[in-house]
Image (cartoon, rainbow, N blue to C red; front, top):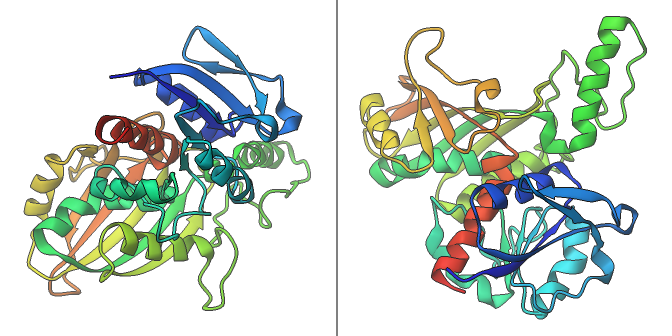
Length: 338
């Protein structure tokens, strides 16, 4: 496999650093690696693998000519500004923000689910990385959809604060400490207290009463998996540092038993089934942190509908929910298209 020149935008953030780590761990065939961020971060040092330290460069001043692939996780407005410029220079941008996801000319890719859609990347030289919660859910549901055709999904998410960035993780830590030492709780990232609490709002509210995060799960599922699937989502921020959890109930066109679902999932690449009816027989966010897999537990039949199943799905949102999925897209791009 030939070596390619790679840039990582947002290299000082939690996802950007995870992208650099994942590239190194998976021995992606890099020629050069460039860490990019805002002007205020210029000169900071970030790690690439165990032995390499990169000095961060200014994104606004960077010339993307000669860069083959860019992995980006720096906010929608930043992506809107720089991604077309990079694409015109011949660099394929794999963007982790929501800005390009619903653009009909930009493929929205989960490699285990819809790799064939990657062929459309040449229209804009931009590929979108889906929402973290959508990714883990669809990795688990794809083999079940192939077997019995999904009609409707009802999902409640329990999302770690790392999904809101490093500042959100710091806020959970500082608020937790403040509770124990009886200090005042400072709220800067979240409008409500996050320590020892749950917040049923992620992103802004929309006209129909749903939040944008919930809307993303609906429209992204339809774009990636099947436009006929109906989705009802409730997204909740919980006081967990890393690892998103989801309680998912699915209604199918055809009969599928819990045993059949379990067997299909055990054969699925990227999925680990841990499903036993005892205290250690399921996975929680603590166990999934740092892992690449999507973990599925609590697989059972739902008697409230004719063909229904319920599942518990857990994954590291910084890895499969962001950095790993982006790197897998880059690997697929290099193998099949570049």
